[in-house]
Image 1 (cartoon, rainbow, N blue to C red):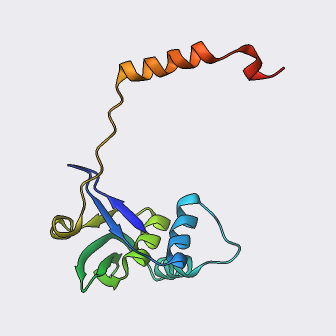
Image 2: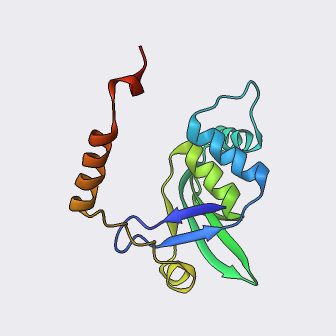
Image 3: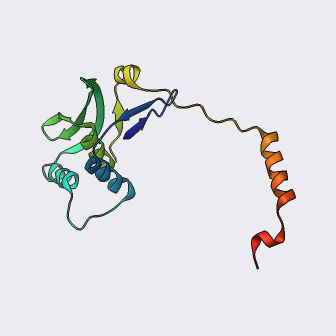
Length: 144
């Protein structure tokens, strides 16, 4: 599952199920893994660059029949172009070229989920647990 998080506002979450190969492609890019030969997304990005096109942004646009859709926005010498894409492929490209990633407001309103509430740590409870630890610990617990 790819989980996109809203940067502003309530930080809503947009979960999108993707396949293992797509998840690996995104993961490799996020981790900075340099394969010995270009993977499919690297090849496509290299091709775009050789043709003088740059990925300006990626937009996850809608869900139709339980399938998400995205667009890859390109800047070219002939003007701006938009290519329809699977969200996973669009994100794999965006991560590789550091292009911004967006989701439409309508999609977020329809499909996003509120984030889980942050657990509230009670300071007194944390202090009590620490005191219990201190009271029960001995030098032997740390070995020689």
